[in-house]
Amino acid sequence: MKIEANERIRICPRCSKSYHGAPALSRADSETIICPDCGTREALESIGVKPSEQEEILETIHRSMRG
Image (cartoon, rainbow, N blue to C red):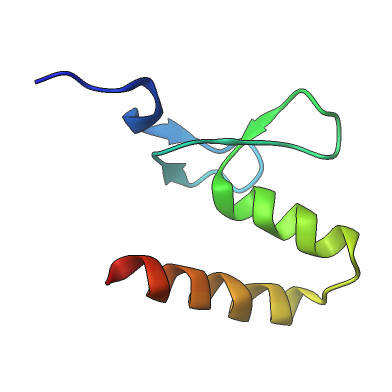
């Protein structure tokens, strides 16, 4: 079975959680590869979305991806 590069398990340097799939590029330095959730948090933060709302949005995204 072939394993695609974006299916590897990685550790996010921002939140220290493991993830797989396509990573995100941090807006903080435009160099660091971070997990998709942290990428979404950084994008939402950049437009002024509060942390509590960011978590609600991420939960909605996760629910929609499950099924």
